[in-house]
Length: 177
Image (cartoon, rainbow, N blue to C red; front, side):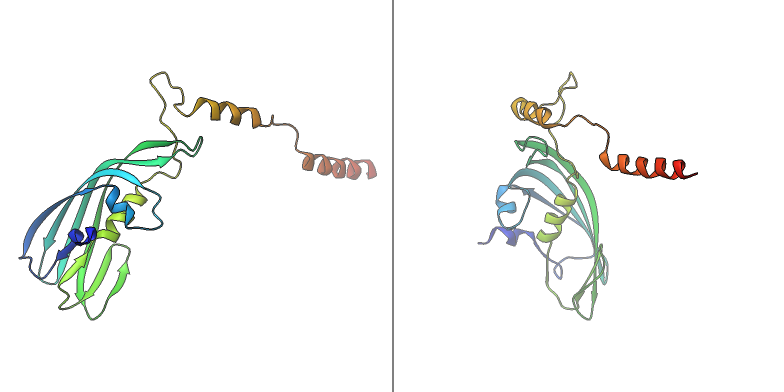
């Protein structure tokens, strides 16, 4: 049995009202997405589906930790992630995306796979800059050797030579007056 089949929701069998599903997202989930930034993680996902006549509203609520590389020292660390997302599934003539949170599927479609949406929502919850958190003393918990090397390579800010050329032009203009 394919691991991702558990994320295929039988939409035609659902009665009108609210339906709840709980999933544990772990390493096996991320292995199924070739270009995933996340390789390891453990996330609890609670999915509530509200079914109406020609409409389903999916409420995704997730919280957990993923292992990502630090942008400063490139050492892996656990990053807390959480999020709440909403997806509306409407029935219509053919598959298409009306907006980023409204999907249209053809009438008579029996199942809907939410795995790609879960993958997307988790990745979108990642911050742009991912660095080790600071400890209680406010110090970086990055690899001290790497941080030390980075500090050695930081150039002292000095005058920008491009401004020197502009200053010469300005002085030349003043001397012509």
